[in-house]
Length: 519
Image (cartoon, rainbow, N blue to C red; front, side, top):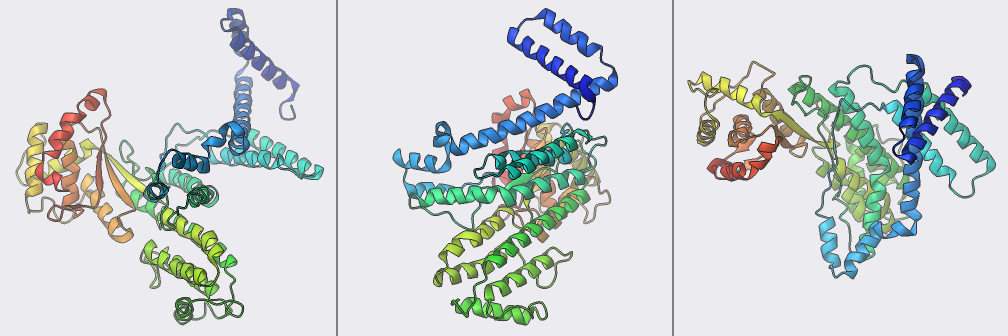
């Protein structure tokens, strides 16, 4: 009412009342006509305001419901059995060996995959405000809140609702891959810092309750994304785009790791004047003082953990540089080796709680995001592979474009066995599929094979659709048939009903191809 007066409020209430009566009655033709007349009499501006009012209302209702469900899950007796610790105990009670449970957790990887959809209408500006309201509602239910606390919280909720009402919730320009990537980076970053560590702690505690242990170097959850790698139907995703998006991911991953190491540095104020450390840690801290002259001059030499944390933050900063600095980490494994030195020193000197606390959180975060944040999947339409191969085979006098799928399969299998290079050393057209595979080779050589794992082949129908990208990958050295090594996993995507029904025969024929079976 503060924004648009009593008239809009009355109309909103009337629409809501009629809609409720219609739902309760089920078949109410008279109510339907009354509702239609009311909406039909509204001019364009009033109709927009009505739509926006109900949009905001449902946003707020969803927030309230989600908070209520979380409270019910955490405290409600009916849902108690669904908690992680209760699930683990139930498995033990039903005869599952605790060692097997711990082993399963330490081998399991759940991978939520973020995708970008043009139909996603909710802007981050709206979602952040809704998240703020949810946080305030949750805090409001806490005990020992003063009247002043409640007044300030209620006032803040009103502010956020007013801000939502005055914010344009519609995207007027389609986001480009970089906009989509930044959005994904934001949400993954929030999850990495705020949600997943607590989940990992709950899992670890559940295992400890049955005598098991969660591996600090294993993350049961790692993130995946298609943003920046989904080329099917999106001409804006070029090989250069893919490389640039991975650069953004790398920057964000290292920012998160720097924040984690900073938190660790604040906790590990252990002084050798008060408590001991291992010779291994002391020697490493002395080596850091020699390697980072000037950077560590103001640090207390009796605080070796903090000295090492500062050196680690500098190494991470150099890892983010292009090209990486001379003291950059070569891999996440190298960084974890530094953290393992901390772990051994703490456990040997009465600091097991510190080792199991913040330090283990940093190690699990590193295992979860590495230096790349999320594993990028590449997706390309099968026609793009055949178009590129048609040009390559034409250059050597072979008609590929007019061949049948079976003929193509035989030709591709024979070419995979051949030792000759099919493609020229440099490809002029940066838009074709071979240029993409060359970029992927560059990325994997530089950043490691865990940055990109899956190459998804859209609209797969037959064996030739799978062998085509495999051959292109071989051309750039991503596949070595001699050793049976494939640095990419090829994932055929069968999308039509007919193609889904033919999966069995297609896969049997594919696995019968000798060079493919060796991969």
